[in-house]
Length: 304
Image 1: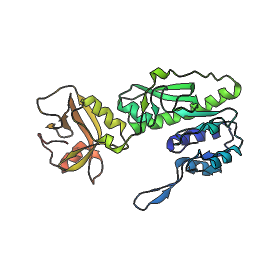
Image 2: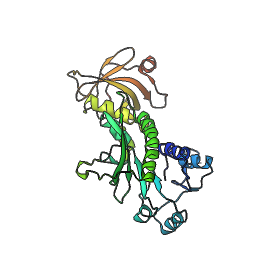
Image 3: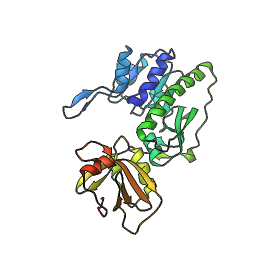
Image 4: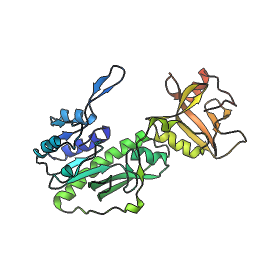
């Protein structure tokens, strides 16, 4: 059970390890773009390429869906970013239960978008956890965990790719441990849990009163989606890459304090944010030097 690109690596790894995938369960196709062309979930595309049957229920908890899943008599269900909460009838259906591949070091970052939150919060380490699912939100017993050290310039997109690969191999090792009886199930420390929610587009609107370090993490965490942005001369300016200078001026946050040949320095609530790569509304993303050759930005300009 899975839907986005993050899930595909695990599906491919399970196939390569010799497991028989009797069914791939994923979200329904969705219209996308101006033409509203129906887009297949990445897991569906991958499953069909391997001649695996695909099931796309709108609500997996409906009795008819549960009855249909039961006909496959699966030994175990692997869940990777499926996108729907599983009811107890499904969790208890397979003899070996349901195993979830979660992109954080549980109990930290239970819930949606743990990858982006790890970058946005400036974490030095993230990772993947496999757990035996229960009816709570990411509250099941931990089976295996693997840590990943974040690069100083880690983005939500780059960490997504790293953890997808780690999760795929970790899931294969987890199933091997369950199969040979060596798996250890460790209850989570619920008191140490951190819950996070969905990332929304408006999260990207930069509040220049925040510290520069916090904003730099936000920019990386929301790259590539939904991106961090500000307003300049009534136009949206997306910021794709920035650095931090631990110094301050006496001008208000959000004001341009310096423009060099290849960067724009902006005062924040604490420190200077140096813009390296930007994208003006209706234009392509580009290094700041290219942007400055075509746009007149000056010291004293205000970002909102």
